[in-house]
Length: 112
Length: 113
View 1 (cartoon, rainbow over the protein chains, first blue to last red):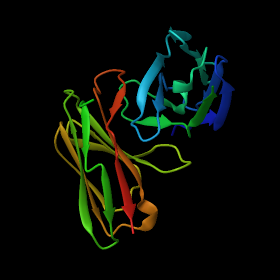
View 2: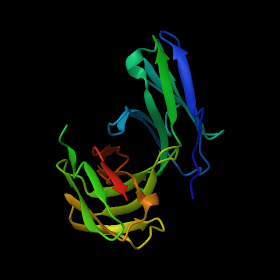
View 3: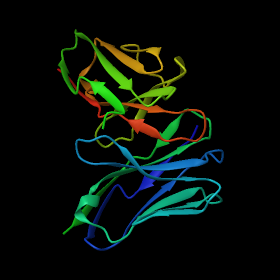
């Protein structure tokens, strides 16, 4: 089955700096990679996703890059703000598959 | 947000109790999921239902029993749980016809005494 690894497990950055979270996956058939943000006491919510037919996707301060050859994808947050503080999860899935494989999460703290 | 709702939000039960968790989605999705979220661990998939049929059961102990009477409702029946079953139980739904995201409910915080 698929194995998703996520690093780092904790990350602290100064407000305004960038944050990068990396994930690797093992199943070359995986082709959908969502990123979820979970604030304390709240549900995970999708913030950005990427499909294997593109290498990069951007939405304002958030971007995701995908390297299919190396089987890794990364979340980039620029100009971080205190409200970006949360736990971020990556996941991998196959198209038309029902299973989502999640990473262990990264606790991001943005220091004002 | 009311797309995926879960009740109760908090539950405390003894090891000999029987209780049920309920999930309801109003998004017209056809796949529903139960996840267990424990501290310092990734989200653990427990069960998947697609068009009311169970498609995944990730070696979950029989003290957890899912039920999916229709595409909008999902239950998790609990009996004779252990303290290590204390966790946040998250329900999610998804349109399984294509590459589509999951939408999560707010979760039920379960404590087993």
